[in-house]
Length: 288
Image (cartoon, rainbow, N blue to C red; front, side):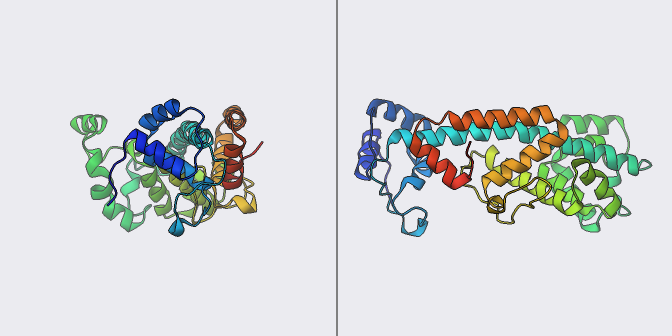
């Protein structure tokens, strides 16, 4: 098993792999801030054997600079923050559309989400243990139960505290196609496309929220091309994911969509090194 390296050893090892430094003291500061291992995620596309991970020896292409690797890290970090802000807006809107449309359709049952008439039995069977048990510790839900009868809080309280994964399962478990249409159609989508887009949002949100690399992330299931106008070669990459975010955001607010487009444009054009820009274009298909 490998042992930990001191900062000087980290610099020496990077040099031995072919990395060029213009300011070693600044590089040491960055390594102590970001971490040698994490920064390695961003040196990967500069390696000679990229993308053959099973044969990785960390040797870098001639002329690879520490600055270009750090530029890629900075781009990825800032893009992740931009997307998290947009994803939060979309997630809140999906909750609102779900609560409003379905609660009015089943207006006589505020707890329609556990009614087997409207929901798949598996969702109802699993709801207490997999969703509501943890929610019972929430002060808002506790306050509700202290002041109202009933096993569960109504949909407008309960769904507010569900995870995006719970909400996707909830949507998928609705029995009536017409109920699903009420939500999907507000986004200009068919049921199948809407499910695909919210699943894309879930994957992207989780990746962003946990600090994962997104400049070359993959969507294994593939993103539906329409109505978000996804390019054929972007159905599995971050550009396709961003296009879904922009599409969904545009259904909520065209102003916010334009703001996000401008922010990503400015971020891409803020990349200082040509090498980092080329890596972004090649791996994520983002370019302006």
